[in-house]
Length: 201
Image (cartoon, rainbow, N blue to C red):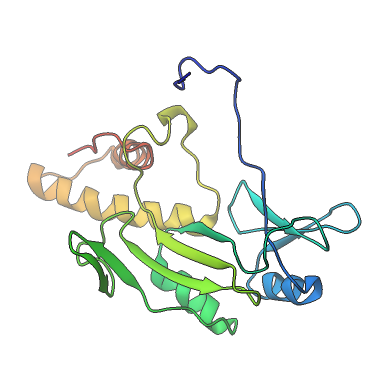
């Protein structure tokens, strides 16, 4: 049975926690603290960390999963992959070089057009669980409802404002006139970008 957002069978279902298989809880705790993930209050025997701006978390502990340590692979979304990679490297993390997707497979470096979803880099935690960082600046159509548009950190909001500013500059060049109502244009651009709908021109 298939459902759609307009006809849910179960109501909202949001991913809350992903369990990470680790061999050394103290070592994993030190690592996720070091990279700046928030350590949450949890019951005894469980450690939970939440990436900045994320609605979902990870947790780990002794004997809470039968999965082999290091067998997890998951994605984290960033609005600027260069900034995110530099921050991790500064924290002492061995981060792979940035690469991008092409029709022929992977290629080195940032996507030349900085296309959303296309620039990535990976890093591992001490057990070898792999995190894929993916730069997303605009969602594909239907991924976010316009009414649910939100920004989960000051950095994410600032990046969206900078993209709106650049796009608005092109808008004013096309019209040949200053736009006194630029706040409304910015707002329309930011909502459309995040929701994956048609951008204003």
